[in-house]
Image 1 (spheres, one colour):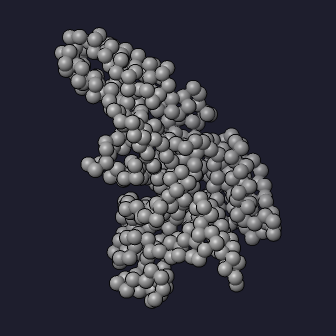
Image 2 (tube, rainbow, N blue to C red):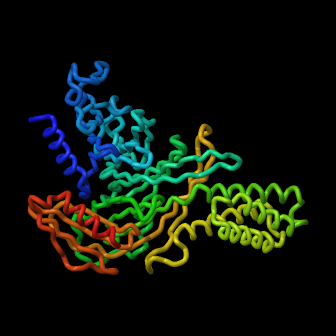
Image 3 (cartoon, helix red, strand yellow):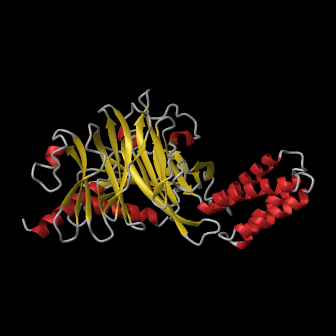
Length: 460
């Protein structure tokens, strides 16, 4: 086989891996310059035989490792060992994604410490340099299945500085079985400020956001559907959509996860500090009108990252809240209330607050994640969880199941692949349309069928 044919065969194989079937990690992806990345697990001896490029005699041949195959367009493959995987831990279920904005390859995998305790590890390859791996701990006794990644970006400007800062959020989604044998879905945001990890990664059990009643008297769901989950880009560069099935209520849930602008947290923190400072200098509550007017002027001054009308509205509301306190509260409580109000109003506006998408769309939680390492500048990160849709799960047939959601999360498509066709159902309000199918052929393979289904929802 010629080199070009071998590359073509590898590419076809990789595209088959990329197909977003439930329970299957995305083990291959394409870079912005056409390079192909493939994640591989196995013993060090099998992946790096003695004398092969990159071979290290200090690594035991029987150690489980994670390797990355890099195949530049038109060039030979290069295999590299992923840092931090050469020890006694056991690597499983790798998933990767190439993020075009930062031109960074991100990898997530399950690592079994001492071969027993599973954790998730996140690494990245940026311009040939490996990022320091980040460990995400869930239940130390539960397998971490179907790990998936989505990435969002935004930028912000530190007060009194002209330099633009970059923030990257790697959204991790995975499944675990609890002690009672029920399958649960978990989410964790890994936040990088100018490429540096902020030091804290909270974990959220997404099943807690399912507010429906426990299902009684409904037919059992297919086990493959119960284990299906997916995270994908949302309607813009700051949102992602998580889709999963609740085994308790037997419903398909979509959550829109929104990374609120970094400037919003900075504005709220700065306004709080200013209210405390001016309040102490002006002997709160003696000069409450002057304190309120000063807070208003300061918010307008520092709120230049927002539309002037928005900054003025926030400033007016904070002034009114300070005046409404009547000087009867502690200054710190007044400042805290003003900060919370700025975040609340900003979150509603970020959530396209002029109207709700549908009757189900509602904000469930706005989480705050603060920087937790001294080497990274302090930044309040705000992430909002919104319920986009919640409907009974459909009945499906045999085959590998894949979930697709629209950019808003309002519409859902469930597909199951069989030998010669892909069957699927699309949501219709709180119900489902009739089952339809795409026949597989020489011109429409499984990967193309998935692309057609994804495109169908992108029009919603």
